[in-house]
Length: 451
Image 1: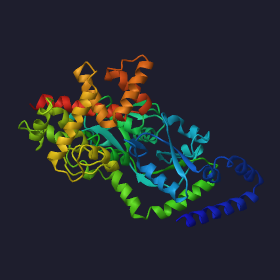
Image 2: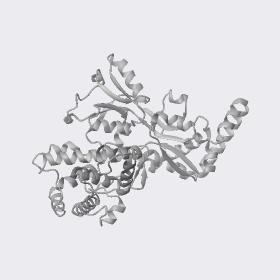
Image 3: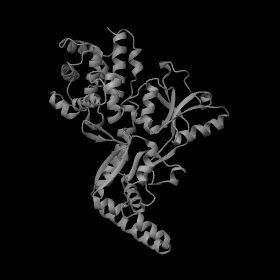
């Protein structure tokens, strides 16, 4: 593979030199601008710097396990040419092209759609996905203002969209096509597609648009959202690179032409975008099940919780969020079972992927109680529960660090809502705070429905 890629790079260099000899001005441009920005300098530094967003399609770090569809693709590419991959998280997608051209990174990996406007500022590799844009809305049982079944019904509806996205251009074209105005809430680049999914899920917005592969990657997390109404033809998703990085472009394209035919690539697509195995049961299936029963594990939840004098709804909410009551499900990074323990956590509590549901719930309750005791200095019970949920998702250290920063910024370190939560959002993105909101909502709902 490496020999193939090196040959490809050498061919690209030869082509570039020949073409440059035909045009002195172009030759001068490439020699000056590629000195620090193209593949030779990247290889010399022994690292490829990726501009990524915090998302399942781009890059996430779960308890030290780094993953994300684009991250895993580029990790394979970097390995094939013998260099390391370094990730630089971006906070505002509006600036990502500027950051790339300022040499703050070598490649954009943010599920970036190839568009005519973007090609004015940057170049693209060959596409690694083709996907359509879809409408995101809450399921009908969630009392949406109106469940949209046809694009024509978007007339006079308010839809939240990142203003510099391909989604924005699509909704403007759709407005012309249906002949009626669509109310567009134009958002800055701090609102990534996954943040917009979160806002619709939490009823802060009623509608948004994302690419279908992003919706699929988050289908398990946001089970109350619908993504089945397609609004566009399939568009091309690729890595963004500088216009003066032709050798890097040729190298990635040569590598991907081979890699896309491998079982590993098919596995990665299945891992991130096959939502069927993770979301065959929906949240509302349980809320509407009737009979005062949440799941077949209620007795175990109550039995284990009673040992620690805790509400069984806490573990019920976590299991519902993590696995939807599926005992042998496998998640990202090796997470397993009802509690979705990472392998290291499972080993600490004495369970593994094939442990019985009873053993998994016993271990899960012990961890929850350990986290509950850890936060015994939180005076308010509901705030303490939120700290427990945050710790379950991220571990102790990130939350303790956020508390220290909260003090430095004038926030109350013993209050989650709009205090420690805000600090985490600033430094860690929305993943942890979104998790807490989702699980706490489930916890409150279960308390109101089930004794």
